[in-house]
Image (cartoon, rainbow, N blue to C red; front, side, top):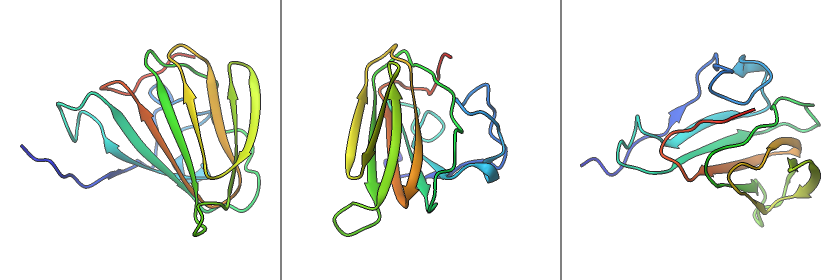
Length: 138
């Protein structure tokens, strides 16, 4: 078994049928996505995990559609500063808007509608979906 794999960088064109995005042009997004755990890399893994890296300095606007999953999901927001600060983000979870600074985490139970966006700064967002394959419902 191959226990270590190199992360897969996001494609230039993203299928909006398989990702909850307003458009599929990766060049227009305020982040670059790297997939670390998925069936293509680890067929036996029962989790999906990706990292979104941003270096933006101002509010980018909306780029994600509100959606839900058939499994629980967690988010980690990690800024580039030594103490993990330096990133401002916003999540809408179950219709309630939450703006916050890193370091921060969020838990979204299965079936709960949500979306996120980076507001300011630079850093990483780690998303973990407790399901083998990524999927969503609008």
